[in-house]
Image (cartoon, rainbow, N blue to C red; front, side, top):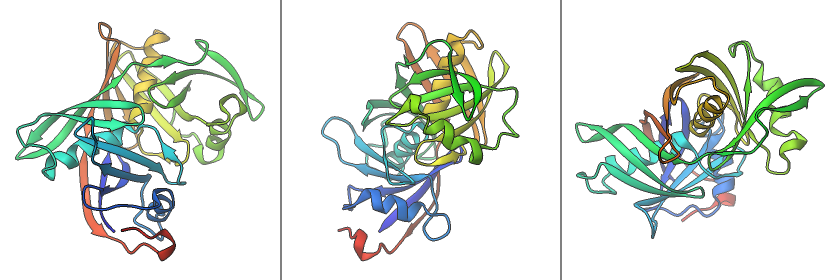
Length: 276
């Protein structure tokens, strides 16, 4: 299977161009290629497919094989791929991508014929909790804000993020009964000031990742609702920085960040995960 490894602020996926190939069992393939010891190593698998309603369609699978609804960092890299690899006209700077969360519109910043930065219209956010809501996790009391931006997020505010043991506490938040049966993506946020947030994320199906675009978007929206930040804020993640802007007129959130192609390669897929 031919693939391209790409990352957006350290949130890395294996991308397969399904204009050329067909992956018969994406869930099992995602588990296989995501393994960082025996596969390519990634947070999951993203298929770039033809679409009847947009320039392309994105199918996303987490490292555990579960299908994701939307990935902000992933969709930026999809935009870069289809532009850089000529799947859309080089004169285009606006690209549409079909996702399970609807069609996303991307604005590209290019240099020397390649996309280097992408702004995504993430659409509207929906509040899914009280503001804030109390919750007990492993016998301790926390407060969170629930935000859905195409996929569900629970945002917790902490004094600092660096010393959090997410490998220990992350699963308890992800699998809490409050979020059953679908589970939830969990963001831990430190408010630096009204224009800057520090963030770490535990993603359902993938564990801790170096970045989460939908999570950063949800966290800024939650922080605006809580009165902590302005309508535009920079989110510092383990893998880099994203800028999130809330447009009050349209009610839409916009995410801007990098998209990077790391390398291209091929991998033999076992017969039990056969593909054409």
